Amino acid sequence: MRLSWSVRLLMLCALVFLAGCGGEKANPVGAGLVNRKELGSVVRLKPIPPSRKVTEYRGLLPVLNGLSPSLAAGSFNQIEVTTLLRFIFPTDTLLARSGGQDISVVRARVRLISRPGGSIGAPRLTIWEALSGWDELSFFADTTRGVETPATLARIGPTSVTQAGDTTIIDLPPSFVRSRFRLSGRAANEPDTVAIALKPEAGAQFMAAWVSSDVAVDSLASAPYFDLTLRTPDGGQQTLSYRVLEDTFYGVRQGGGPDSTSLTVGTGFRYWTYLTFALPDSLPKRATINSARLEADVAQPGSFPADLVVGADRLVISPTTKDTSVAQGGTGVILSGSTTFSVEVGPFVVQAWTSGQAENQGIVLIPVGGTELLSWVVLKNPRLTVVYSVPPGTE
Image (cartoon, rainbow, N blue to C red; front, side, top):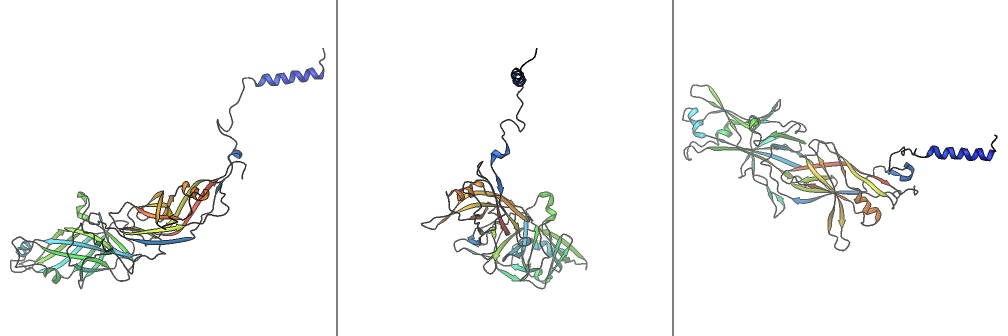
């Protein structure tokens, strides 16, 4: 029996229909997913440099460095750092070891162990006597007047500073040390004190860091020590070593401190840096901001960070009072020795600008926490990278 062409076509359609029954295949791009074209466009803008950048000094905030595991001395970014050391000596014992009539000092040497990775440049130190009273809990700041209160110092000379491996050796004049031992006019067993300060030479640019007395028990040998060599009655010599009693360090701004173009963020000396980024006209107002990342280089040498946490917040300036405040953004950590800084400011910050909910008055970089330590970073080449998407069909 011959079938007409119309019947044949009808049978073919039926076969195709039946073949599809119960044979539905999974979406080849995954359940719930759609073709990429339906997502719209995702665009990463070229890094935007700031149209305005300025650093502002916000005043002193007392910091406590006496309990830090490190000591420091040097000068960078117009901030000078000084270390203070105090040693006590049992004068009666020294007198007995020297024969009971006088104390004959042959050599007076201070040893400090460098902290690995903490020093920058070759140390150029000057040695001073610390005259005024201080202890490890001293702040060296007058918050009522907003000024530094450095220790009163007197230059000691001649002195010698050398480096032997990881050890900084300071040789003091024996006559200076001997003059601090009282043979009379003190109570029995009353000790005597030698207090010295380590300051950078004028104009020197370096930062030296040493292990302080606030170290783990198994590292006590790394703390600062004073090796005192005496002449004994038989004409020989005897060296006695004394661990530092108190040690700390403090900072003083030189010439007004970091200038407004330095892009400094710091604790102790509170420095904030303000950055304004002019968004390009190519950024659509209807765009959804996916990411807004701030990046910068960290000046090394020049920075003195101690795991500094930096907040990148949206700056808000009142149109009526002109008072400034901040709206939370993101936070990032700059570790000691870091050469780069990166923080997600938050897409909501730029989204507020593009949507008109907030005026683009810039971003402010603020130290977060860490107020118990003196620390600062100098940033270079800041840039803002924005990633956005636009609705489907509007590319």
